[in-house]
Image (cartoon, rainbow, N blue to C red; front, side, top):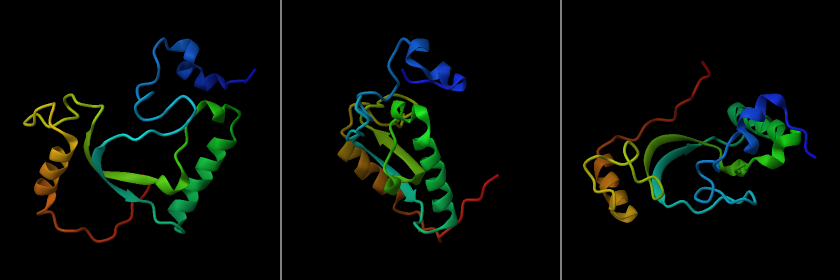
Length: 132
């Protein structure tokens, strides 16, 4: 039997009668991440930077926990910060979908729409995210 840290018990299956929110759409029961159609703008963490090393160290510590098998971890190459949250196929409801767009609008049409909305934004210079 796997020992669960008491601080994690509120998240345990025994304390929750429903599956996790993204189970079956974002990830499978075997820890695989699933294809999740949508559009979002992300900025990947630059490999080799102190921030990247710190995030990898935290990820490694989490993966070394006895409870790690209970979680799904993205690949290290997927570490990123979301810059613009677009829409996701499985989240067709307000406030996650633009109020002026029909909820049954196809993802490719939404991508074209967002490209049009974002085309006038000037590219940003590289920036650093600082801890607070």
